Image (cartoon, rainbow, N blue to C red; front, side, top):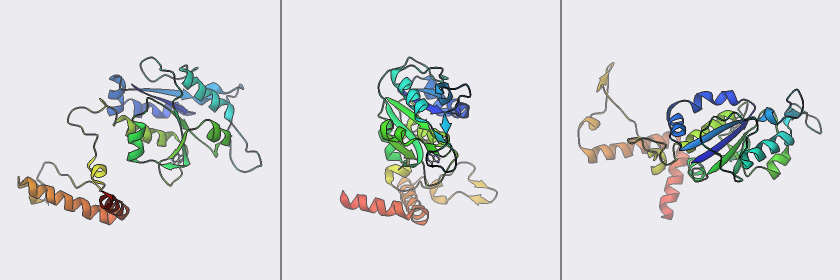
Length: 248
Ligand code: ADE
């Protein structure tokens, strides 16, 4: 079973994601164990402070190292002090891979999701405010991950995206008829368009070829459509695909 510990000041944000669809089913099936760790449980004062003003001055607040080190260490020892255990099953101790969600990180990709799906224990740190004390990044974090070049109000939504993309790759997470291999990323191109019933909707018809029953023709049409779309919206993927093919 893969274990995720998610360290956050807003554990309540995760309720919907953990209790719906494939993630809920994977948790129930014992494929994944997700624990929410409230960073404020590791605060030292009665106000439950976890951040402070930056040395050297400047705007905003910075997460202090103390609560984050203690929260991560509690995950590593298998005891989540006061944590809101959303998961099932006993803990397995171990260092785990400590991942910090930050716009300063490496851009998340399907390739990274595949690598993370091989880990048994992931500890995700969700940042907030202006950032975290650099000693956390230098001495506690194994990897910094960004989900794209834009700034969110915190690392919680990025952590959900990371969790979702890894869980669907875990053996046993998807039911029969569901495929973890996405056409887009296995071919290196974006997906071809899909249609379902009715064959005509408000005057808009499904392309004839899809109703022809000629599988070779359908394959060819899908490849052409995928390439056309990828050239239009993601020319970078076409170049990458060509480079990969020329190496092989
Ligand atoms: N925190 C704020 N914005 C982020 C992003 N784009 N990726 C990861 N963490 C973030």
